[in-house]
Image (cartoon, rainbow, N blue to C red; front, side):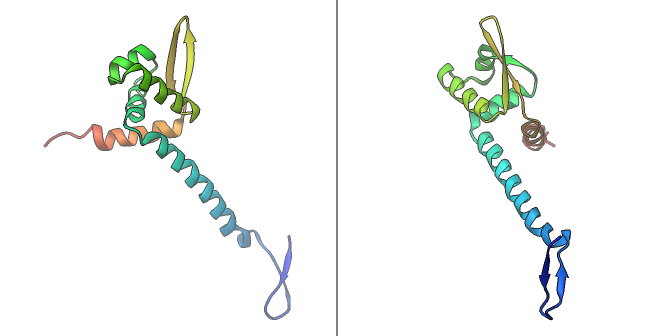
Length: 123
């Protein structure tokens, strides 16, 4: 524990509470950077659509191509970005590469987006 001097000249012991705002600010800054990166990854319509499909389970590239209607070159590019951002994981079975969601944070956001935008019913 460190000490400093109060305006009266008497030593004052520093407590955990003295450091909490700075630590909290650092934690919030780190969390906001993580959230910003996740939202950036989700901000492309094709990536968002791919991830929405992957909430239903694991799919190979050709299945995703049919489901989302995105051509192979663009699909591969978007899947590469999702892989780089660690939002999806892959496994190989023979010549097929299967994709699934790897990020619990992404899955939580996707579920919220689904409830807000996709599950609406007309009344």
